[in-house]
Length: 454
Image (cartoon, rainbow, N blue to C red):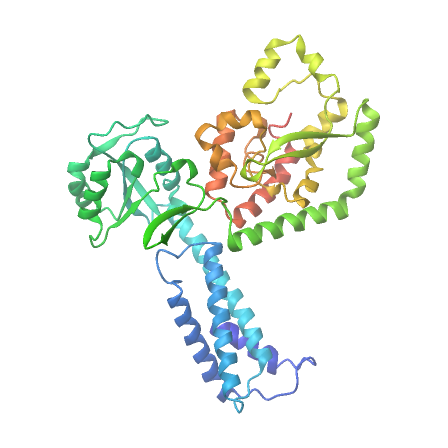
């Protein structure tokens, strides 16, 4: 903060930029004023929870709190100068200081977060954790929380909920003990986080767990919503008529996250259309001359909230593709199983190049401009594929499908269908704007090397 205000003072009073009116900028005034402003911002940061361990390392939400605290401090200073007309203050210094301090504080926290992530990967700054429950919900929680780099948890194992007929999870889960041994397990392993898979525990046991561990010093007790199928969206606790009720946020991205995603999508899509229209025109002409049929193809897919729309692509197949497959049952079986064919006899010469280079999907930038898709997101799926996602289908439809995504840079069609589903879920659960930028940087090498493209 001090550095930002000092640089702002130098720009305003020392560089002699003609935009600013000549002024001495006496250090005797601005030094204590800067110190007071730093103190005010620190106080506002503390009140907004920016030093609360629960909110540290919060990504874009942390930046939103920084912006809120900085802007509130600015408003307080403006209000004081309004009440005290004799108090003359260079507004340019104040605005420059606000911008520079915000940038430096945000950058500092970004560097600190990356350093902590790297240290967590080496086993530092991890809180020992237990998960109560051994069913499918507990497995889903472990898969998410086991990503220690982001969660900060070292999941030691599971505690079996006694006398519960638990549903079969996706894999065998080893239980360290039962509810009767929970006190001993917490003491023996210095557990700091106790996560309860609510759907795997009887209601009387939930009450008993809260009674025993809800107010224990040094231990955080957390309950899942019991709704692991929609765990990618937010759950808000609201009071209606003094009754606490859980409300499900229907979409994954809200607030600042939504704004950043929108800016990234629209900015890239507009740039591609403005700069790449000659390429789009040339590819359209090639498709038209290479084989009879339309230039484009519309694929019916599901968008945000399950709303169907037509995804635009350059046509890469012959128009008599169905007739070609009619006499090849083994290819039809492979197509039903994997949704793609490695050696597809329906693909045209131009289509083969377009698919391997991923240029067949270039027209989807118009879907992005129409608000139906994102530049980065999960794979688009057809209504028929929807059923194959099983319990995860609600998660998939909480964000828009993407032109590229984690599946695109991780092997594309070389991945099994289950692996593609897992990557989609991983992307949705762990979305950040930085993750999108990383995927974009990895997309070009993946396309050029044609990994898994056919």
